[in-house]
Length: 423
View 1 (cartoon, rainbow, N blue to C red):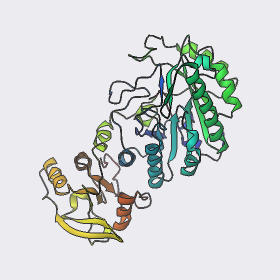
View 2: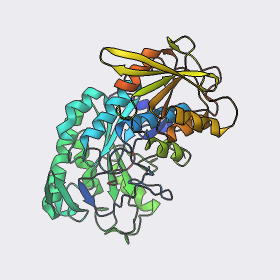
View 3: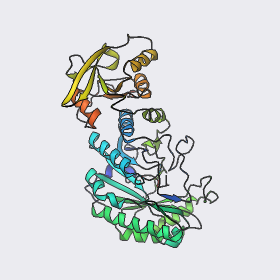
View 4: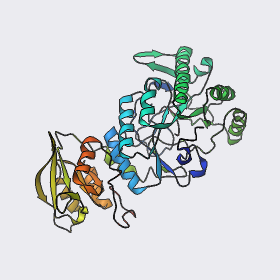
């Protein structure tokens, strides 16, 4: 593997750090360009933990807002990934915009993708330019006669291919994608879904082919039988069967043995996923629609009109700013609701700021943050010049250098598939 890449902080690639380095999956990719016979994408399913499942689908801007909140509550996150619930390159515009936004806001974050590989090659240079360091491709067969039993169809543009023709096209694109990724120094993991009676005898052949292409690690994943799929009645391989398959494959490629078959909205440590805990924040993010026409303003908690330096609860008034040609202008000041009243106060504040896309504050509690988010107002906790915060909100700038917290502020506070598998 490329030692210059931050593999040591990626829990899916380095088992030793899975107890203190976490990941967040940003579910911005609902569409898919292939249909696997084991896949059933359930976007809003809270009772299943597997690839292809998420409680919500976000836009790129909503994903950035959600990630901001996640990092406030779980600072151990080192990886931001896109793993569905469909394929990231069925709609590459959303995927690439999300990656660019995350890279700009959090330059130290590891960026990761999981894809079936059909449409990756067209975006190799951009992935490298953005700084994506880890890519997972799901390769279930290196023989189209095996692949034809796994894929119902493969869609390339507006043309749908079936049978061996579709499997052959997919395999060709996957091999090209792996070659291009490795040429650009990107770490590549291959997921292989083990399906008894279909490709369980074929996994070693996959390992041999992938090894020849320079793949870094292989993750043999047991099929997860899903209702309403062609493989719904397939029996999941036993642990002993999977270990025998991994042992044969390990003669050719290192094996990943700690995969947790993550959801498309997984968040937290591998052994302590917090998707259920963060579900309300994920849902709240879907209400954030920062239209300049509908929400042209940004509210600021400030003492003197130059710095963001007041906690939301301390502010007696808010400055209202707007982006105009040539820069940012102060529009007016609005008096904050009087202290007291509990949640009612924050609901009144949300009404007061209903034409604002964000509010810049030096600190904020969990309850008011949640109320504001549910009203479509992004709470941005930061310190520094107002103009820096305005640039970040309106232009996707970098808040990493200006974000700040008060002493002890991190405790209990916040601003708050295609079966490709874990990242």
